[in-house]
Length: 304
Image (cartoon, rainbow, N blue to C red):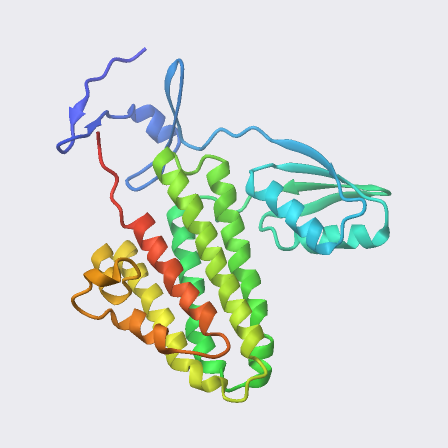
């Protein structure tokens, strides 16, 4: 047993030096991540998270493709590592295969008559949750920027909804990482989980928008509305990741509550309140979800 003194680090934190031999053994250096778990015996420090394979057996007999996707996505998000699936028909088997392709790091490794086994394979992306969370934002921002450019291209617009699959795959992986303990703080865990679901809904809004306006001849007129939605999401990205703003920046642009208290018009709110036609509802929905995300992500944790 080693005894070490705690060292003050800032106004509210204490640190302890790690044993050199342990650090050298695990080839750790400045900036590397370690994992700390707490139980009734104390704190346990590991170089990599200690995981136990989680197994589950389910049946998809009678399920169609959407039902199979929904079931497997839920299991994936909850952090299961192996899934034994029982099925009845060849079409159900095909539905399983196509569903698994949407789940990063999962693969069918065994397929017998009437059942198959799906396993989680190691993936490099399961190393840095913050990087993955940032990537969700970047995918959404790129979608909105590209959308504003293809509004005048009917063929491109019709196929744009396929882009949502890229976002869903990353969101599913991020939710899975939360379930597997890659976010240690319970406060952060709850807020990240909620934020990811909202970001996924923003992607759904983009899909619904493109489906609704794909046959609209003057869809290019909606470019300004798309740009406004993109600017609000970009503001949140800069505020959260670049530390360039706070929640009041969002209220100044889109202040939905207590309109009698407004002294200055909120430009984004005023803009969307005057817009009509197909697709506007979904673009405004993205803006309102961005406000919700700002309230979740920009609220600093208060130490009690």
